[in-house]
Image 1 (cartoon, rainbow, N blue to C red):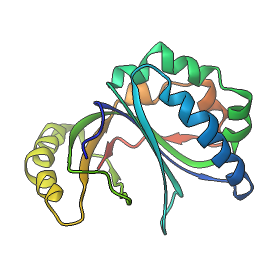
Image 2 (spheres, helix red, strand yellow):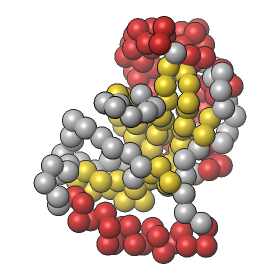
Image 3 (cartoon, rainbow, N blue to C red):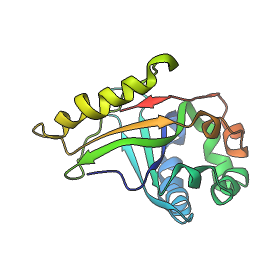
Length: 180
């Protein structure tokens, strides 16, 4: 299934073991509904790793990347709720990118997800995007068992904006620049 919109928030993270139950309650009952209620957000999903790390991957889809840099979203990030302030410090190994969707195609929504994070030298980025969009990714969509394939490119300026929520994490945040 194609992604909904052309903006994505992609977040990978681990948690302190003692924080998992609280995280699930917060994420299900407050965080996801709050994010989905921001104008321009289309949907959010949480995935749990089977045998790799980080353990969690959260994917939020929005109309555009501009929605993800706009005041409605930044307001939420800069005025975290009490519950958010309690949960977010338990995040570990956080990688988070605000992305433009450069390619998306698919026939449905699957039960499993694989992500690949990488970078490409700026001198060849245009050629690599073209090669991925025209030659590499389209055949993957037609493979048995594949329901969707996506290429997301980080908007590094928006991804690196410092917010209260980001500062509440006890560790720094990586910004993956290319994601398939």
